[in-house]
Length: 298
Figure (cartoon, one colour):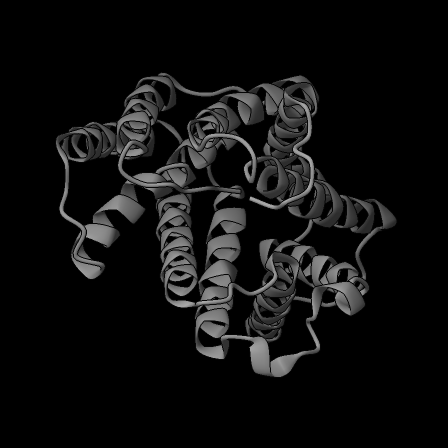
């Protein structure tokens, strides 16, 4: 914690609430962008990176010797996979299902920490994992029989959760080994840049057009970079420097609900009974597993 005066709890809770609302708007804004998924993903990260670079005189992003390049490179790669998978999932499954599945990352992080970081599992972790896996099976298998092409979308969302989990584990491993932690905005600047470049390369390889999109689509891609990416993630990181991590658990559990409500109010999208019951089990499992791991989504 910094030596500066801690903000009031009202300010902190207002910032946390605003960050959850901003992040929860991402799925609906992506649907409204009406552009290929990789174009939206690349635009989101590149615009965010450009804006972060404007702060580089204060973040030290040009001090190349202080950047842990191996960790930053791997984190950027997995962040690119996360957004590539998750945003693509929204083209073939519901906002509710996609958000619930991608929210499984605390469970995946806990399992990964047990396997790769040799941190022993606890009973809450085991119970939470079992609940989340059961909910995942209900949601994915149930919807595959009722909603056309939803299996692909749901599996992509799950892939997004796994990619985000590796991104988070790299961050934990890096911060735990460094004597002097890198400036957060510097770290995010380089990760956003690498992620954006990789997604842009993905656009080139896929043959998706780079131009010809309406001003409507461009406007929403810019909004995605500004609102969920910069405002949402910056506020949640700032507020949680002062709040207990249990509030982060609440933020993770609220995001799918808030995102589903926003999608219903703005674009009239509903959800299936499999999404409801499977999602309930998944979020219950995430709540249990969060006792074991400190994590975040988006």
